[in-house]
Image (cartoon, rainbow, N blue to C red):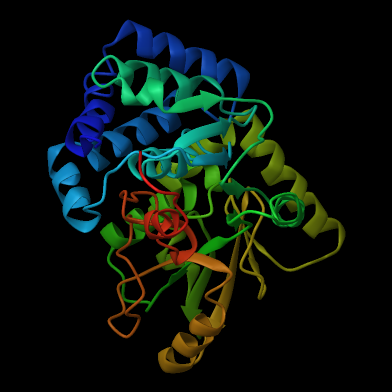
Length: 341
């Protein structure tokens, strides 16, 4: 039997005091040197969120929700994403806590952080060393979870066609405004849009606003906080590129100086851009969002009519029970698990 509380607490303890830990700081600096999207603030945000998502309370909630914690010889392959710091860890953690031996293939964009975190966690519970194998190739698997873009998702689905698999592809997140948001709510929305430079599937890339909405309510709130994005080399290159395309095509848009806002139906927007669309009534929009639910990861809004929505500022604060694509990863793993040892 696995001691879930011990395993969860080990993950938590490995992150306690990372802000002052010289080893953690060295790892963070190395990760940033290899991937300039992973600046110190982005890495610290991810580590802080993971620290908040683990610990004793979460361990007790996990054990209550998933009472089975038996180890078995099932080999789970996990292809980890690297668009955000440690984003691939959720599948790996679910695999280990579901009793699997996890064979993990890290993204070249995020190699140091996952391995170092689990090395530190193994000092408190050896399960984070004993049940994980880092690999460049995945073979002899009983199940697989892979994350990629729409093109690689098709490849993964074919590659793992003979075993149970979860394949994740591109998704975006959206926000719905009423037009009556307070400055504090709009500032919180900025966290949903700009955290991790908008690179995550939980990053808001599309706004739905009521007809007649004036962005003069929004942009002056964001400008003092987020105009600093124009100082980030990789981000500002994206911003200038997409602005140039719009200018050359004489395509109407709003230029905030660090962000381009464009009216269009697409949910996804590239880095440095934010799509928006006007809606007539909230009931029709709600039905539209239901029909599009396979394309978005989360919805943020303060409108009570949108029962699927989370509050502004919470898109990039997922807990362990916030499963990607609405699929309970642990339940899926348990359904496909071989017999226990």
